[in-house]
Structure formats: structure tokens, C-alpha cells
Image 1 (tube, rainbow, N blue to C red):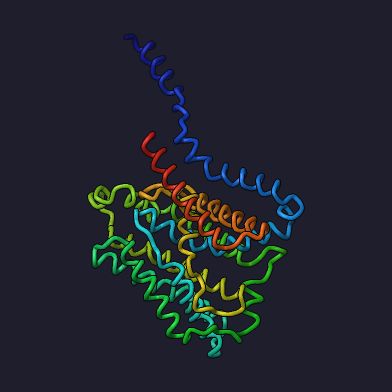
Image 2: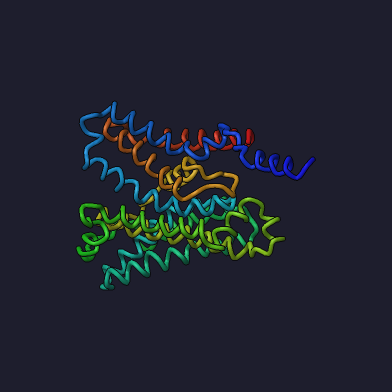
Length: 331
């Protein structure tokens, strides 16, 4: 073959486009497509109310806590793990934040200590236990879910805590240029974690750990450290979600966040995060959280009891994991 023919063959090979498959389309546009179809369906079901500005803002507001929790759960699923304790960490962080404010601590300091710092500590405990015991995170976080919930009930005497500085709710649950502050908080957290996951060495290490832990170890990645960091991120997200929940309700409830781990996991999985680790994106998680918010909103508009919402969430998780496994195998 002449040099000219070789060059032409190389140019032809370089112009060949990758085959578009159902797996590729699902990974890129599946979650967004579900959201668009859902919005159109809800608009048909309730045309006079669903697409109003107030209701759409309400959807964003309702989705903000789920997005915060889902962003934390996302990283634990990314390493082929899970965090079932996010709802309990939300309740405990919110309760401690409220009690600090009632005790006279300025609400800014209370948010930092009760939300961010305590959330990080609770997440770190989960990560240390996973590293030390070598047990699957499902077992560890299942046990810690019960422990954190029990601690919340003990320190609150199973009673609601209220009567803190009104400025706390006005600042954290108020509006900024017409946009609810919880939505802004969720957007800022999601944006920061998106940057961390996509553009930092830590993010690349976490993806590598989820893709193949043994290969990551041989590549020199500190598996224990990255596992610890992942659970700290989950704890901080839960702590921030706890602060937002207390601000929105005006009180710290000992049973706050019960069952929220289901919604958070559903948001991450529906958002395209592989339950088997190593694949997913924060943008998909945000869209998944919006899907959950839209579903809850339309069911509330239709006066459907909350029990049925649990059925819908369970079905969505099973369906999303099934689709992930199916398309993963076809790929």
C-alpha cells in the first residue's frame, strides 16, 4: 500500500462516527426525556394549575431537599455503595441546629455547627465504620440510620423544638429576587459537587474507585481515604438539608426525614447513576430530583394519598435499575 493510500485509509477511519445505540441514547437523554414527557402529561392532567408560576416554584422548592440528599447519595452509589442514613442525619442535624439556636447561639454559628460540621462528623463515622469493618455500606448505614434516629429522639425527648430566631427562617427559607432560598442553596451545592466530580482529581479517583476498586488500588488511589470523603460529602449534604427543612417548617421534628432515603436513592438512580458504580452525573441527579418533585406535586394536586406516592417511588427505583442493567448489558 502506498503512502497516499495509507493516508486516505486513516482519514476515512477517523471520519467514521460511532454507532448510535439505544444504550447511548438512554444514557445521554433518557432522564431528560422522562422529565419532558412527565411535564407534558401533568400539563394535560391539570392545565389550569400545574404550569402556573407559583406551582412551578413550589415544585422547585419541594425538590430542593431531595436534590440535596440525592447529591450526597450520588457519591456513595458512585463507588458501588449506598447511604441509607441520610434521612436520619437530616433529622439529627436539624434538631441540633434548632437546639443551639434555642440555647442562644446565633443562627449563623448554629447552621455551621449543627448543619455542616455535625453532618460531616456523622458522615465520617459512616465512612470509618465501612473502612474498619469491611462490611458493605448497606449494612453499616442501615444500622447507623437507626442509631442516628434514636439519638434524635433522645436529645429531643421525642418532642418538636421551636421558638428560635425568626430571622433564621426568613433568611434560609425566604426568597431572593423571587427565587426561594432553598432552591438557591440546592443549586449552589449541586454546582460545587458537579465541579468536584468532573474537574478535580478527587472526582476522577471516585469514578475510578466505583468502576473497578482493585484496578484503582493498583493505580495508587487511596481507597480508604476516598471512601471516607464520599461519606463525609453525603453527611454534609444531609446536614444542609436538615437546616433547610427546619427553616421551611419553622420547627425541628424528631421524625423529620423519615423515608427520605428512598426518595434520594430514587432521584440518583432515575438520574442515570449506575447502581453498580462508576457511572453517573450530578446533572442527572438534579433532573431525577425534579422528576420526583413533579410526581409528588401532581399526585398532591390530584389529592392522591401519600401511601400511593411510596408505591410510585418503589416502582421507579425497580424500573430505573432494570433499565440500567438492561442497557449496560446491551452495551
